[in-house]
Image (cartoon, each protein chain N blue to C red):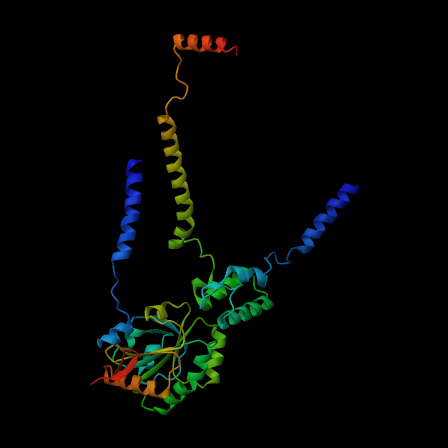
Length: 147
Length: 201
């Protein structure tokens, strides 16, 4: 019974903390890291330009109006163009940004793996077989030295 | 594999060599003005923020968009600005006053608002009683096409579509008069050479 009550309490807390309309709550500090100051080419959270201040003021108004983060980003794109987004949307030519780095990483791993495999095949035998007469000579020498 | 290990480094070295050796032609507006051969104004098609009074070119703004090709035959001034920019604030009264004073509107004034919040931009236009049309460049594609380095900057374009004068920074009355004359005449009337402005014959 106690476990059931505890589980019910946890669930009720989680439900109460979620937005009533199921939308993500916008946070100005979070949004500032996701958008750019187009005039200075810096993320908005480090920008100190007049244009950035206007952008932040607009975001504050949109947050106060109850817009979701995605609505706010769309509004910013309407005002400043797609370059206002710190991460470009993953479609069209922008896919290059997302596909090329992991593709290059994969290609590099394949090249390194292939080269390492080739070098290992070419490596000389370290333990060459010892001829019986050599083995006998070594044994005699060790006996003489009272090893 | 041999192809990759040979071709990739070779292509990389070739790319670096090309970057070092090749020189891109300088076809910027400023270079063309310095050489005395004004180049055609870059094209654009932008949404209209405020229609204002465009004089005889009002039809170009009727559908809510301005395509620069619709201005062929009309000399115009293109002023890049933003409401958050202090030098824009200082030059705007001169532009608004000059436009209002010229009833014949021989040279069309066009404001190009960029990197701005549209409500701030409208408030700015109302504050300075700007009567000429203004378009919006939500990104800065048009500004980059013109080679603008910031705001404010002003370009003067002749009736044949060539950029005949360019002013960087807040424009003053003398620069405005020179630019308007150049736009009306359809040719440069002054050029900056060696850091000094010289009159052209």
